[in-house]
Image (tube, rainbow, N blue to C red; front, side, top):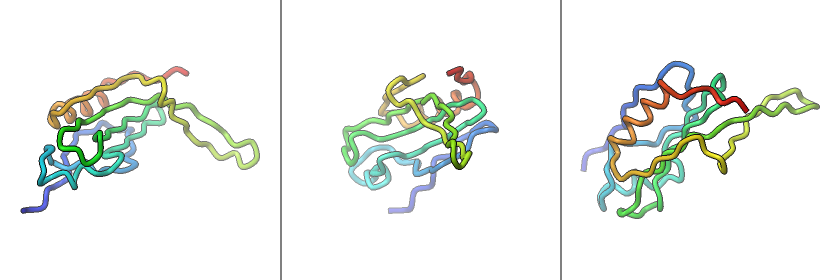
Length: 121
């Protein structure tokens, strides 16, 4: 079987790719090794205070689904080091979509990176 390429994504400026393991692979017995990571894509936009995360659930299950979420971020400053970190509120999502259709997920990621409003925490 030929190697499968990463899924092309049109992502607007301002988004930082933390990791990308999202391949042009639809769920099948032959492609499940492309969907066995706990998180396929994670994007952050610190000016919007949002993150986009894509999982495949359950892992290694050909009958699973893509799970797309938009997480609100809050800034935390360490009082000693003055280092800034960002915490995601995974319990109160801005948006979520479950789909078995990879191309629907691609379209939604591209739409979200263009249209998502800033989080006002």
